[in-house]
Length: 361
Image (cartoon, rainbow, N blue to C red; front, side, top):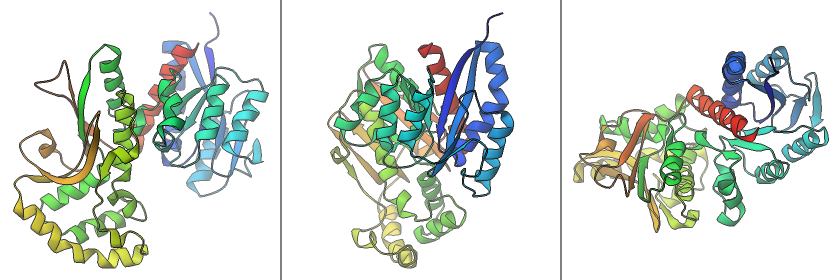
């Protein structure tokens, strides 16, 4: 029996998603060897400051030690195999110099500035799997090569574990024409809208969501709508529309004058918005949703009241995406399901790795 195909994995980011991915990989790795004759082998794990690496492969014990260290808020600098302080770009270069081939670089961070390292990985012939939306949401000139390459996958960037990107790829690859994409693309804002629908005050909902860790530490990171806009931009570009972020009108859930104040001041001023939200919702029929709607000409990302359509049936953190196309003109093709969660996001990353492992070797 021949040895399984060995695919080295370089994981950039060992936060919540990165750790969930590694845990799933360790649990399923032998099953993937048995089923597909492919061995997905972590060789390097990196946080924002340092990395551990073993070109022969990190043992399960070494991977578990990294997971434990990061859960406890520790740096990787003290771990066996540590490379000390190293950038993501230098780590990719180090892997190439060590002779690693057919590697897959996985970005599970939410960091800006990863484009250089990811582009370097592509130039080395490596595959890329992204859970990080930011490298795909820059200017079209700097991101177009990610969308053009068959060695880049990013299922987890939109809809977490929902097969949103792969469904859109299927439509495009089989010759369909996409006219319109519409969806509720934020589990956090979906939770907020459901609570508003139940009659709770806007300020109360945001405060509760922040206390429970549903929002970022600064809730404006969610309430600005920019995360939804990035997802919409990725879908538009994947559909073949060379859009820029400026082509989308993005309406935040707070006024401009609250954009630059401290988090404490922002939270204190939230009750001032309750009356306006209640009045808006009371003046229109339907239920509140935060929606993205895009066409080849641009789009809108905004809070609105929706009526008798699937988006009105959403509850909690579920996401929904609808594609109106030449084939699906009368009844859009619609996906509905969990829009967040570490496990489903990690599973999307793992599936992308397996896809690239098959296609690259």
